[in-house]
Length: 260
Image (cartoon, rainbow, N blue to C red; front, side, top):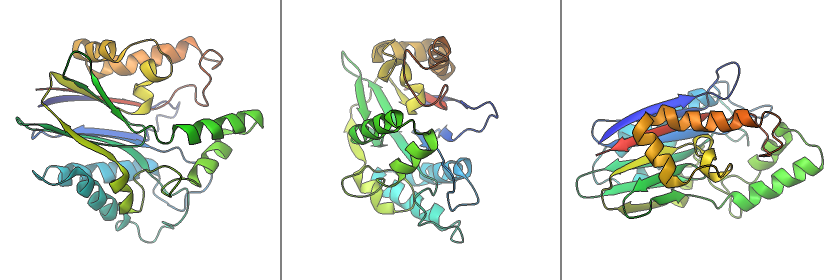
């Protein structure tokens, strides 16, 4: 599998909480680090966390036949062991959403945890894999924060209280058991695939400006840079966030385009 990667910060200072990479053996990973709010209990920060988790997840997922949920669980455990002096019980300790694709000639295996997105170009219509279990929680919290005039910091702090617990939603963070809640499966080898952070999927999911087929074709023609640019162009049309209400003018955006 051939894979190309593009990742762009949504911040003026260039700090990027996304991470992505792929291996020649057919493993691709996208991580979307969760926004920080106030204290985290960790002196390293989210960019450090996603780099460490991504490198270890690539390694574990590269073992043929190993369940991807096990690979993620072991990667989470590995990273927790790198900073035991940080307060890993803090609700704001760094975490990430996850998308993994492992391609062989026989099958394509995937894992998605939270709202990262995998789009597989297989049948007449693309197969889209994402974990939307958090949607109703996040929508309720966002609406409440907006009604109260709350800040993004208050919104994130409210989200932290329902992560990685029954009745809430699941992310890669400190507890390896969260990996068992990922969406996993296998599809026949396809014509290609996209792995996206939620920021790179906005043209379809939030802005409703493109279809998944159109986003795939854009990635094939222009590479992952074109996918990210589509998000940026749409965000720039609405600088005041009135047409598409959102807390961030620009989100970090990361895309991986895979072809056999």
